[in-house]
Amino acid sequence: MSNMEHDRWSRVKGRLRTSVGEDVYSSWFARMDLEAIQQESVHLSVPTRFLKSWIQTHYSDKVLTCWQAEIPEVNRIEVTVRSPMRAATPAAKDAAAPADHRREEHRPAAELRSTGATVPAASNHDALGGSPLDPRLTFASFVVGRSNTLAHAAAKQVAEGRRGDPVMFNPLYIHSGVGLGKTHLLQAVTWSGNAGTERKVLYLTAEKFMYGFVAALKTQTSLAFKEALRGIDVLVIDDLQFLQGKTTQAEFCHTLNALIDAGRQVVVAADRPPSDLESLDERVRSRLAGGLVVEMATLGEDLRLGILKSRVVAARAHHASFDVPQPVLEYLARSITHNGRDLEGAINRLLAHSKLNAQPVTLEMAEHEVRDLIRPCEPKRIKIEDIQRIVARQYNVSRSDLLSSRRTANVVRPRQVAMYLAKTLTLRSLPEIGRRFGGRDHTTVLHAVRKIEGLVSKDTTLSDEVESLKRQLQE
Image (cartoon, rainbow, N blue to C red; front, side, top):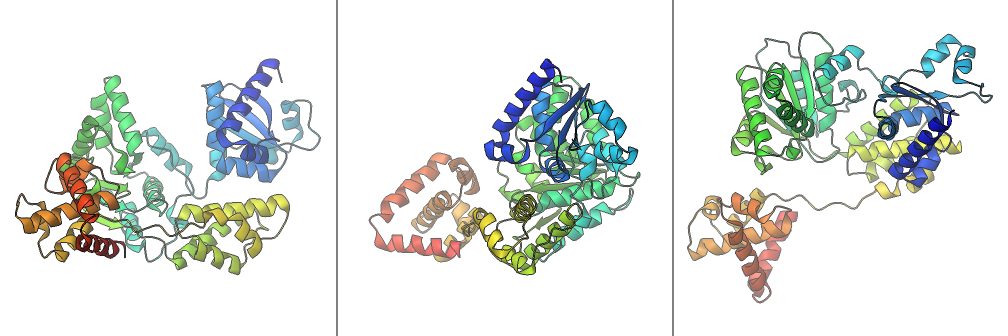
């Protein structure tokens, strides 16, 4: 290794240590060495197959990013397992290795992670400028349960459609909280749709859509960008709640309309229903709500257990001796209730602990390793519509009365109470709350909140009413 390569490797290791933290760095990267830098690729080595597999599965993007900060033209990281007696040069080592072994060790990380996704599907999608796809997120690896049956069936129907078939529901809009499988389903639709040559399926995050449109504007290629999007057979947009900017939103609206009117399929995912996407134009929300809107609910215990079992099976493909006893799986399914990512994280921790310490997985080990993943139950997410409905019922007025311009006493007080509850029980801003109460100004909401705050501290009857309403909403 030349002095220049040594200096570059030192700087990359410094970036990596800063990025992942000292504990992670010492666990996974302390024994990684630089073998060679060859134009657009970097060759690294580690002492064991387990380290290689773990780094490629969990940190390949991170390592590549750190190298690109040093050498921008690098676009591939290759990790090999070095022999105990290292040859003088990487070339000599390669020459000494059996041909089949060399091919296995020098496959790119992304290829090694592949679990059923075909190379043509990936290359077709990349050529269309799509967001990166995870090869693991296919229909085959998706675990179906009561909370996601409808979403899975709808996504499967979209994926199996053929060009020219009538579109059953358009757009398909899937929403849920974090880590419940939205992205998995959307990427599964993309992998499955692109597996054949008949249809073009494009998966974009809202961020990538915005970036693509802004870049096209800067390079004066926006017309080509629009035409390319509208030539897609199935457009899949993830994390729509992050779509920002009036111009970008207008372009999304035009694209949405053009595709739907032309009989092309649109699939969208977000963390809330269309009516709650306050930052989006009313026309976009209306068009999104006009298709099939499906909510993926929280994972039930049976589904959590199924997910855990599937992750253990996937881990055994690379680590045949890895085993998690049934009582441990049941404990994890019972205790980790937040989302699917925490379940996968739990299995990864048990795998790492078992392999690095050469110990079988036990209930005691599991209790210690996943203690921070066992979170207290979060309060119910309360919607403004629920507040309006329950307040209207409590005060014997209609929801439309609360949203109207009526100023009679029997409507004003319930309206102020509802605004107060919306501010204290949700994360919505004052302007958003005002808009949801008949398009009122944020100063009106602020006045209502201060008014009820003042009255609650003095009027015990009103205070009891407000507490009762809070209990009803949180049940």
